[in-house]
Length: 81
Image (cartoon, rainbow, N blue to C red; front, top):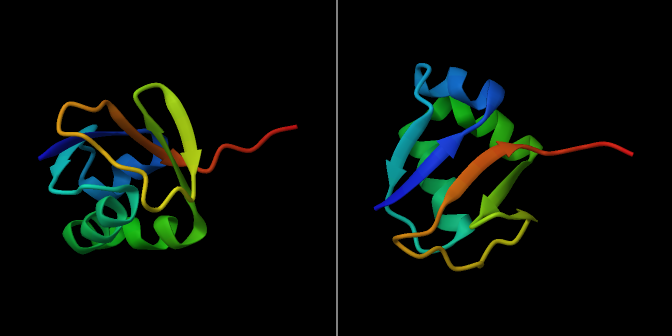
């Protein structure tokens, strides 16, 4: 199981939980399973999310491996300029 920390508005879809656990080997599996476990996350997942994996931020890195001891943070897409 991978522990996933949720930032900001994503917590609303998990009844305020800041951390959830999910069985996943990569970013795509993680998002697919979260959408099933927490249907309220699906609209944001479709709009786009970023994942910080062990301190490095990824966007659309679908098959990036996630180890069981990895630090995973899920957040809405980061924008700026």
